[in-house]
Image 1 (cartoon, rainbow, N blue to C red):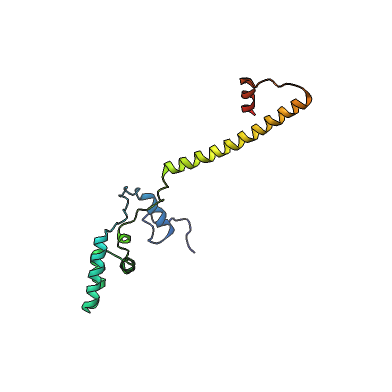
Image 2 (image 1 turned 90 degrees about the vertical axis):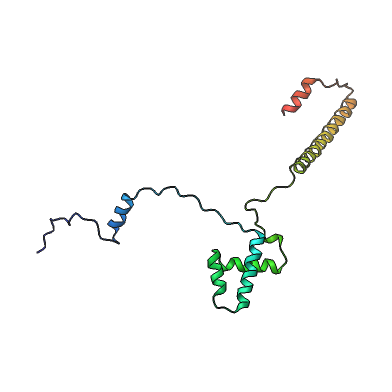
Length: 162
């Protein structure tokens, strides 16, 4: 019969087991803060040079010449494909690096001008409504034979608080 009272020998856990993974997680120090990788930007001249070199490598007939070029420069074949498309469309300006992120807004002065125009239009509409109300009040007062006093500052203040 097996003796179940004895523990396993106190050595490192076998590789690949859950215990080994836990032990590695406990013992590993937090990784040192490595510099954040930067996105590579390519100039239009560089892109055109690589496209010309790739075309020359294809024309040479040497097997694997384009792959050798891409490995030497650290590029993907998709880079070369996209740059060829841009060249074929005549988008020399498109070969330049593009600014990433949100596009710049329109002219801030134009936006402010448009906002102020909308505000003026709204206030003019409110003024027309107020003038209509005043005209109606004058006509009602004339019909009833009452005279209305001129509005005071206090009347204007009460009107703004509504």
